[in-house]
Length: 137
Image (cartoon, rainbow, N blue to C red; front, side):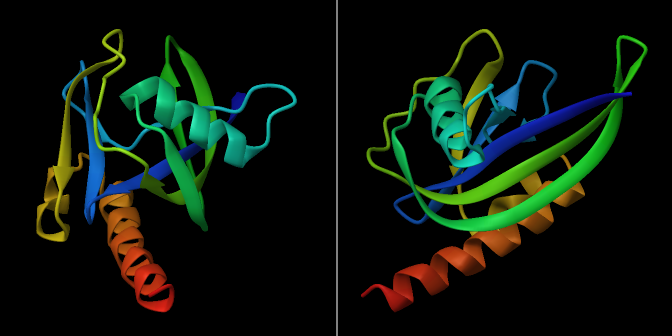
């Protein structure tokens, strides 16, 4: 089994959540591997920039998700550290090698996300985003 350590962001732009569509028609959040010598927070910021072209800042840590999957006959055990993030600007530039579309979704549109675990994460992200901006006003 291959153990993957990743980090990603629930990136909010003007109150809406950034979601990306992969070539396989799966809608998800930007995330990727943590490089050697890199913290999870640094990886999340880098992955958001690489995958959707957004400069973003971390507002809070959300938590970790874990799941397993098989790819090329190899079983993977993936852990992802998630962060609540705010886009500094909202000009999305997709990493064309992996993604075909991006959307800014409202809380009512989280059904677009392909996986139940991501829909649950989105609910938590919207709640944390509301709390964060209520307490920083």
